[in-house]
Amino acid sequence: MTTEELKTLKSDKVVDARSMACPGPLLAAKKAIGDVDEGQIMEILSSDEGTKSDIPKWCRKQEFEYLGSIDEDGIYRLFLKK
Amino acid sequence: MANELEAQVQLLEAQLKKLQKNQPKDQLSIIVFSGDLDKVLAAMIIATGARAMDMEVKMFFTFWGTAMLRDKNKSPKGKDFMSKMFGFMLPKGSTKLKLSKLNMFGMGTAMLKDLMKKKNVASLEDLIATAAEFGVEICICEMSMNLMGFKKEEMIDYPNLSYVGVGTYLSDADESKIQLFI
Image 1 (cartoon, each protein chain N blue to C red):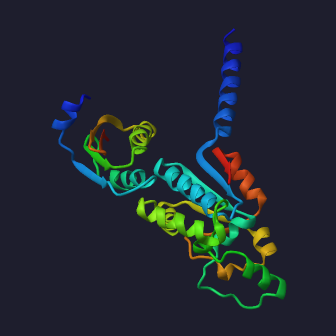
Image 2 (spheres, each protein chain N blue to C red):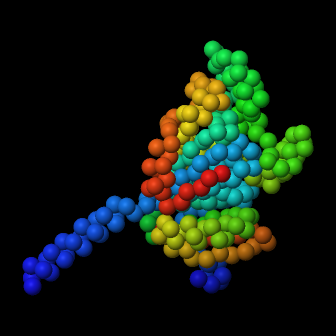
């Protein structure tokens, strides 16, 4: 998805992992995904650059659809569809 | 002709079954031999991360690694002199571990802990709690425990902590996709 498309997305669940270092954001995402239904969109906020590569890999393993990320002044917004 | 084909299919099926049975599980098995703070931190980060990736995780604590699992608030009775001395010289639990490098009589270790706090890196104690919450399995090498003179009563409260031998480790490692020695 393009950044413009991502910006218009409505997230069903937002995980705020902005103050966390590795492996915090991944663990927070794992914890939160249980509350998300099939087909819903989850957004992860992180200030840890490693998360940008971790979440797509996690999605591939869990068979979630990774939609892309937006960088906003050092905060990464990552989107996935369960 | 048809009989031959059937026999071949049966043979293939049997081979496939055998292959499937020997396929490693989505499991990570880690030997934690070291009692150095930096190394144990790495082990715990990988272990908790693997649980987030939905892998089964088995950690085997052996030799110096066992000292991390001591509870600083527990003092078991009935140790002999040598065990007492040994226990006294080794770190009593996760808060007492030192860096493998740059320890500088504890100054480097304190500096790292301070930096970790500033940079929001989870402390070893937090990671152990997270590991328990996420279901990381911890096994302790019984022989190492005896050698170091540690008793079960002085170990941390951790869900389903088990005391095992090398056979358990080998059989679990045999079934694991990833094996690490730290």
